Image (cartoon, rainbow, N blue to C red; front, side, top):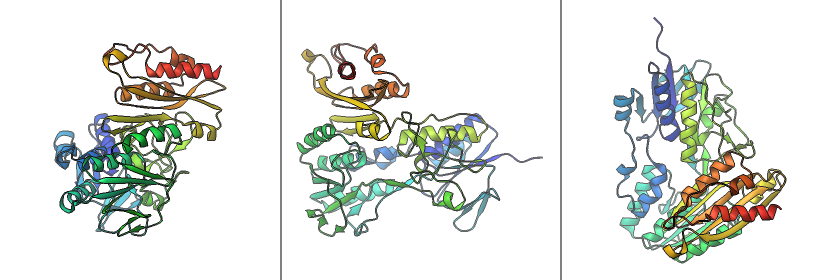
Length: 437
């Protein structure tokens, strides 16, 4: 009697557990084994800054499901503390630290990424990253036990800004340093000005255009600090894959096709260790986000279990919550569009987020379109209310390849307490139409 087909998944967080759960739904008879080198699976990494700030009381609240839940409710075997040190595709085996060999019929690599911390002084006791549950626990304990007064956050990406805001909420004096003159990796002067002005009102200082060469015991680049958080991005964990002969893409992550297949038969990759494509340019991109990891994992798991599903790519949609202000973006900036070969035209507007007589606040919208085709290419939304809905509408329009004219004619909802008769998106779209004309 032939044995059951076995799917092995390396990595048990967003992409890995999504792959395993989807594979189980597709094939009830499949033997599924998840190997996770850490002690937890299926936890909410995006909640870590809010645990540090105190808005999330306990790390237990960020653990979505336990290994026992997957064994009991999903019939998925999950082994924590199981570190894979080698993949042997010729034998269809993975090797664990300690020497144990595990055979597979199909393999999903979901090894994730690790924080970049290759600076002299990064191992000092008051220097932290925020990538794992243990990182968050150590950082919050340091804050509560040592009572630091001055913090430096290196990196003005979304994690850096949320951490800076959370530390300021705890009463620390915070300075954010970044090598770029812009925030969030978006080359937009207005976006940077709005956000830095907003956070500056809370006492957060910015030293943009400052390249950090080393960390000292007393601070960073002349800025004194009792606490330093490195938020300088992540690097995909691809060493296992590369040693096994799996191809890497131009961004250093694992190259996959739309079915999440690698160049090796029966081997898939998903999540923060893998590339995908951009829905606007069609070019490979590396945009490590939880939403992307979950969707890539679902497709990898389905195909490993016998389906033929595809992942169309991403628009790079993200949103940052800075207490009462949300900052969101999707698609390409003007600079990125120009680099991709488009002829971009952009507009930036400020409009009320609901009817003024209901007590409105400003919403800022930027839209970018291609002059030749009038196709929407990207944009950003900043405001206190309605930002998630507006950026999601814009992301849907960009993914669908809508033109500016089509977007301007969208039938968007209106009622005075929550939305104005002319939504800020439509105000921006009409200005963009005029600019294109």
